[in-house]
Length: 338
Ligand SMILES: [Zn+2]
Image 1 (cartoon, helix red, strand yellow):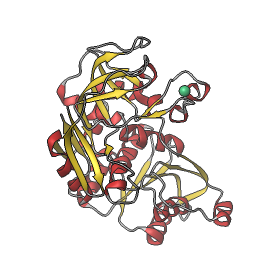
Image 2 (spheres, helix red, strand yellow; image 1 turned 120 degrees about the vertical axis):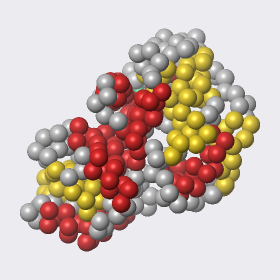
Image 3 (cartoon, protein in one colour; image 1 turned 60 degrees about the horizontal axis):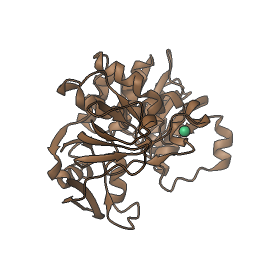
C-alpha cells in the first residue's frame, strides 16, 4: 500500500509499505477514506521535534472498517468510522471521567496518511456513523478526528458559555474551530487573533465578532481595551509557544479560564506571574473520543460545517506538497485522499 513517511525535516515521501494487519484481538484495520496534515505534523517537519527514524505520518482519519480482531464487538467490517488520534479503551476510570487521552491503556495512532491504518483498542477508539455518509460530509467528519475535537475541548476547558467573551490565540485550523466551538456553546463575543485576511474571513464565518491583528503585549493590550480593561472570560490557546501561552494568560481576566491545546514547545510559566493572575489553566491532548458522538450528530444534521477549514485537497501521492503548502502557510489545512 501507499503510505506517507517523514525521513527528515522537510523530507516527506509517499512510499510502498506493507499493508497493516490485525496484531491484537482488540485491533481493527480500516481502509482510509480521507486523512489530513495536522499543525502538529509541522513540528518535526520544521525540525522542532527530533525524528529518530523514518516516521509513518498521520493521526486524523475516517475510513471503512476492513477487518477486526476476535475481541472487537462495537464495530464491524463495512462500517464507516471516525476515530481519535489516541486509542483508548473507553472503559477505565479515566476514560469514564471523559479523559480518554489519559486512558491507562492509551496508545498513539500513527500512519493514517496511507491507504490502510491499524487502529488499536478499536471498540473504545472508533465510532461508526449511521450508514455511509454522503461525500460532502467527509471533510467535516474528518475534522472530528482531531482539529474539531481539539477546538471543542479547548472551548470546554476555557469554560466557554452563554454571555462569555472568548479570545482565541492562534489562527490555524484548531484556533478557527475553537471559534466555531465557542459559537456553538453560546459565547456572546468571540475575538479571533489573526493577521491573515483569508483566516480572518473564515473566523468570521465560524462566528468571530472581532478580529485582533496585534500579538504579544500589543495583542493583550487590545483584548483588554475590548473588555473594559478586564480581559476575556475564556481564552483558547492553540499554538503552543511561550509567546502564545503568555498572550493567552495575560488576556484572561482574574477568575477566567485558559484552555490550552497547542502542543507545548519549550513553554516555561513564570510562577509569580501565574500566582498573581488568578487564572484557571486547563488543557492538554484533547479527549476527542468523548465528543465524537455529539460532533458526528451535529455534522450529519448540518448544524456545523467544520470541513470548511480544508482549503486544499490533494491525492495521497502528493502528500509532500501538502506539507509544503501548510509549512509555507499557503494552505490552512490539507485533506488527503488515498
Ligand atoms: Zn481508558
